Image (cartoon, rainbow, N blue to C red; front, side, top):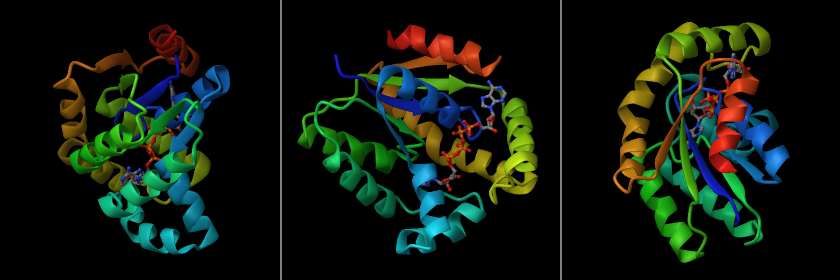
Length: 188
Ligand code: B4P
C-alpha cells in the first residue's frame, strides 16, 4: 500500500527530523512547507519575499500561498509515489483545501500522526536549535508566538481529522531514535 502521511505536532515537536528519517527508510517523498519556504527566502524568489515577513514574526504564511504551492507540488508527484506532509496543513482552511485536492486526484491520506511533546520541551528544543542553527524564527519571543499561533490555528486541524477518527498520537519525548521506532511501528 502507498503511504500518504500527514505529520502533525507543535513547532519543535520533531516533525522535520522524523519525516527525513522516515522518508529515507520507507522511500517516500518529503514535502515540508517550512523547508520550501526557507529555501525560497534563501533564493530571494517571489515566494520567499512574500513569506519572509510572516515567518520572521512566527506567524503563518497566508493560506492561499501555501494551498497553491501544495497543489503544484502534488500535481507534479507521480501517483504511485508515497509522501509525508510535514508542517502542512496548518490551518483548518488548508485541511479543507487538501481534502478537496486529494479527492480530485484520487490519492487519499492513509495515516495522520500527531507527535506529542509538552510545551516546555519544545521551547527548550527550539532554544537549542536557535543556538545551533540561528534560524530567524527561533528566538525565545518568536518561538512563544509560534506556540500561540499553533494553539489558535493549528489545533483545529487535529480536531478536523479527529472527527473521522483518523489521528494516531505518538509520544515525541525521548531520543530521536526512540521516537522514530514508535513512528515506524505505526506505519509498518
Ligand atoms: P516548520 O519548518 O514546519 O518548523 P517547526 O514546526 O518549527 O519544526 P519541526 O516540528 O519540524 O521541528 P524539528 O524536527 O526541526 O515551520 C516554520 C515556519 O514556516 C512556521 O512558523 C510558519 O511561519 C511557516 N510555515 C510552514 N508551513 C506552513 C503552512 N503550512 N502554512 C503557513 N505557514 C507555514 O525539531 C526541532 C528541534 O528539536 C531541532 O533542533 C531538532 O534537532 C530537535 N529535536 C527533534 N527531535 C528531538 C528529540 N527527540 N530530542 C531532542 N531534540 C530533538
